[in-house]
Length: 592
Ligand code: H79
Image (cartoon, rainbow, N blue to C red):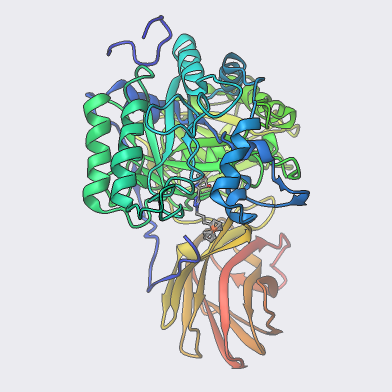
């Protein structure tokens, strides 16, 4: 460990459905300030909390296949090709003999991570396939003993990170091992035909290899365990204890299992809708799968990456974003170019990422999101207003100064509970523009969802609703092999059910209402406001979620109102509601 820029200078599933009744999110009337971290944090904790943006790398023997096996294409998680293509363990292991990623360039990868604005790297040292990307004394199925390359790539990357002031962490799949006898999903017997237990695999391969990773590569940022499966609590604790002994300050991801990790890794690709407390990480990926696939052209755009990064940071998390090198160890050009564009954005607005804390609104706003850094608010605007007015709901402070970061000072005014920022017509940054607000006093916000007075419609998700006599459920499904999607929806709807949203309306007038729904038969919808205004409409229901218009609902007075949705009459067996959208119609209403 040497060098001034060293990050540690002071130290040597399957579809899950669960039912939750009633309210998911309690939108507080007022919140003040955000999380502040304690003073006695380790350097690893500081890098995690303040760095907020890191690179994940999936690289293993699967990278050699690039999504293809024996002339057949496999879509989705390319690191699962052994499983997808049903390749027997012995046949798969033979592939190592021709795996020669001799263009793996640790310095170039570190440079890319730095260019992207990322603060540490987490790389797969052994994925479920069981192949170690480091020199291991405990299993020869590794990059030094089983391939023509014979280079310890984990060492090369760790050294390059240390030289260049980035943190380094290792992914290690502790439960699954598809080629080691006794590992989950692996052969049950060894070469001599003797039955091998998981306990033996754990003792003879997993623990010794984690020991190697935590002793041979200098100081590390974290160990990223994955898919704990049926690992016992004692085994999870033993892994944590081993990491602690060798690397007292390294963090351990929650996927070590049994609730004994140091921070929460959320589900793959999940960005929570409301702020998530504690230390946590959101993870996402450049292509659809984690390992490189030559067939997968669904590269994430700089726009997507910037939005997701900002959304994760605004919910209070740290964003770990994955790339997969190809069979030669090269970073695909599309991935590098996309990340470099992201990096230029991050360098323009470092306050929005480094040391940035969660939004006091605790959820996204219709045009973007907010982060806090020290005593300033940063409004990150994804949809720049076209009429010269950006409306910020519920800020109870006075604005002392507003400016476009890298641009002009802006005029602001208050209208009731709303702050209007007068914005130039031209969008300052097509990826995302940033407005800095200096305010008086401690931040104080009424975070009731608010309907955007201009621009497009405002989404009111079911997470912000309260429900009566029906059920909120979370579902998770795969769009492609390994590509997870999430949806919160309301089911069990009968004629007695009601779903209520409370939202702030800046102006009285008509608001166009749409419902996201699915089911069978047809449903007679009713929406009523707390002022007694009601609209009804009937629609056929379809198998997949779609948006159906209920039409114009009148709001008599500006301010907070409750909208209640019900299905009054129907020949239906099943109705589900996802969310609603509300959009000001924008007409004079003084004719009546
Ligand atoms: O490393 C990446 C994934 O390979 C790994 N975690 C991220 C970071 C991961 N391992 N398991 N899972 C994610 C859950 C995925 C389970 C599935 Fe399947 C794999 C669904 C489809 C393929 C197992 C096999 C369940 C159904 C078939």
